[in-house]
Image (cartoon, rainbow, N blue to C red; front, top):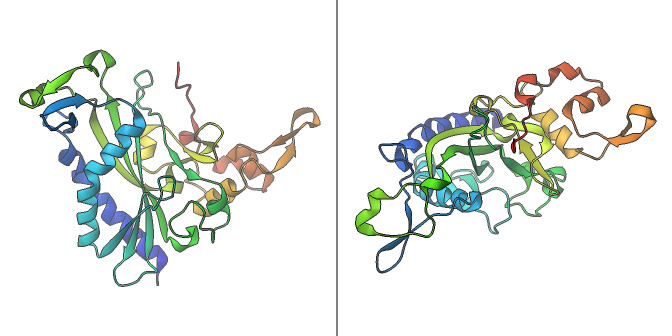
Length: 283
């Protein structure tokens, strides 16, 4: 089995596939086709702007297309057994169960105050299953069983809050008059390591964070671009675990790719500086 060939072939097919997804989920004026929830008497309730809700609804909206992609490319789909399991979808070869690819849906919004940047993603845990690649904890199949780990990403613009009335109930006759809560979709496919940053992705949980410059995201141009997946794995397996002496001899944990490369005796200039720019999202 030529794993690299199979991975590249899967990636190319997936990248070709997502080219038509914007049209599939968008109206002619680039709004989301999903307008709200409907009840049995045909009342429509607007959707909350909560990112977790939007992410799940986008996943449901796209699932028929994903299923068709799997059928046309000779894969079975295995969904995560539990909500907190990685990945969202596993593709398994119809003719060979050893061919497995992980696919996570990743959605985020553009930052209005920072043109060209988005809020970023979390790219999965760097905990037990990432470190111990034979582990079955919180993962559908052991990490080592996957030939590649992919993100199907969606970047969108949030509709201004003053244009959305979450308390209003619409009749189905007024469906086209409802302003969609999100619009202007941009799709991309990258391997997880290709859009990774060097900082945690959320609070105090062990999640890998992404870069957040949109141009670099859609071009798979992350901080590890000049290093490759092995260095991505090595860095995140050891994230926050190695202690070095900092200024004044004070011990500190390594939490930056530059410091990690110096510690490993590698040229720190290999960090993709273009993708390492950080912004204060709340400015």
